[in-house]
Length: 426
Image: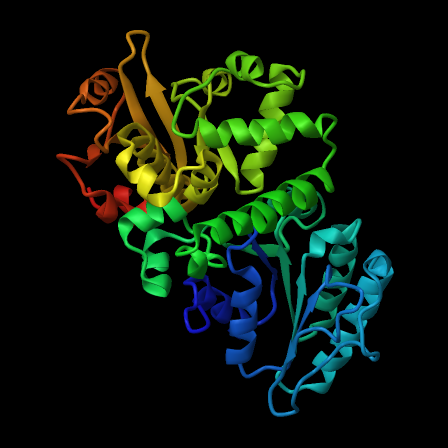
């Protein structure tokens, strides 16, 4: 873990070697390595810099800092950060002003990285004013902003910072990355998922499960959703998460979901809560493909965890038990395929499913522009039925269709292929 650097590191290095034309925003779910990546990059570049965690505990010592030639640079004059509740826009302005002084004093400029920036109320409006002033002055100050609440980051970016930033997305770790960094084979990746933090714990599954619950799921829901968004029915949101983990890889109507939940709600509320869970990198609802966008939005969602560790932990199956239950393992493999398409597709590539009135279906429809690529997953739970692929082709133009698993592309090979590569070539 200490020697492995995610591919986004080279992108960040390239941005920091350019003149500071845009804010650099690094965003993604918890435990995807954002902080580690920025630390790695700041130690590689030959620039004075400072990396400050906005949400560090009150007793934390001076912020993480790295430098070049002149030694370490700290933007605080005391031995500790002010209390979390005092890190407001005034604190942000003072910190930025100190970074400006460093940038003016250095012949190599300065890099200011602020972690968990969304914890500061009205952060985006303040950043806008400071950044615009720096551009007018031609100040050699790069600013890197990190956040683990993508929805809140997106709101601030779209409301105040339009045209002023570039995004580096840190999606969940892929099979290729977990194999290189932690020697995961296919089965271990399918079951234990793509979280690097607890990867060393997988031989002690009780410890691994505890970490996933207490250090990943609970902070994601409590700190990144409930504490930062208006959620009138928090119990309903938590139950929806559990339902999504249990039914990952399956199509479930909102009305049927309500029948499975103890907390009262309505379909509109469930749809919004599912969006919140998706933006937090937990569970998404994949829409049915249709030629008209409004029909896609009104469709029954196909639930899909964005990291299969969430499904495994919720199931209470051990690794060995999961592998011998063909039905559960089939849903787990299909969820891994869906998560891979969503995570590597970003906003440019859209993922759907398809089913007709006769029950013929396509597991995943990947859309890029006007091109469509189809995927049917065969992991042992079903045998050789590709009628959905054939029927879909009768109604929609298709670039290519693939069977993933038995009789087709090996699952391991599929998981090594980013979404964009399915559209390369003629």
